[in-house]
Image 1 (spheres, rainbow, N blue to C red):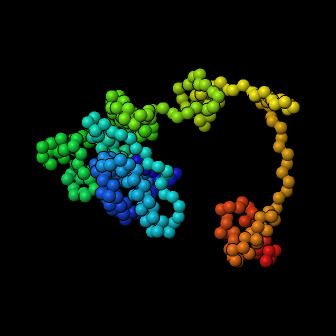
Image 2 (cartoon, rainbow, N blue to C red):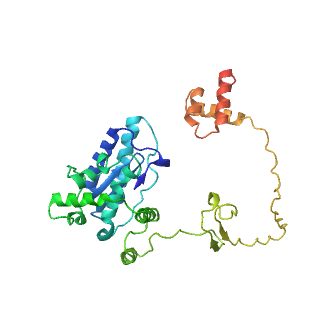
Length: 320
């Protein structure tokens, strides 16, 4: 799975979906990945695939992302990233959960309320797997082939799987495994994977605040995720480290009592941005730019107020 940056859309028109599918087909063949199910949503994608060689999946997402971002930036005259970091993926025990994951992926548009039936959504693999529509991207998995001796029987058996919705437990497990990176399968399957890679996979939060130990956990999430909050919602109760002893010649810091305000910071001296304006004029001379163009070139590095102040001075003829 891969999401758009900050949950923003990654597909804007039909031609964008078509372009991504063309890229996906080309890159999947180059990376030797067999794709069994997919769905392209407005702001994220889901793929179910089998890699042919090591690191094929990472290479596929990297190359698809690079080529598609280049296409989007060129088409819509934009710059910057499109995807939200690295893709998220899990290892699936095919004999038990592969068909469940296929249903999860192809029912995504139905759960999102976009369509009433999966066959009405154009940008998924459901039409290929359930209706036999030609699709050069999809490669049938052995578990899918075992649904029937003929293609027609497989498709009929596959369609029947969609007569019932996924249970809340099934949805929760897929989502939890995806977020934590836990292999989706039996305990024995998980142990085999962990033994093979020689490390524990998923299921636990990494790390803990330094010099603390957890004493208890209530039943709801803490407000704002603050482990010291004791209002509504739950709290992580932990022991704070003892105050450090002062070094020789230093006065110990006074402990602030609850409700007591700390020392006020000294007022900042008045600053009108003249130094920054001088920097702008200097940059203009260094790079042989008209002074009026400098704010737009370096506005990402200066305070907006300083740039605005400089612009006002420029209009008034104060800087030449």
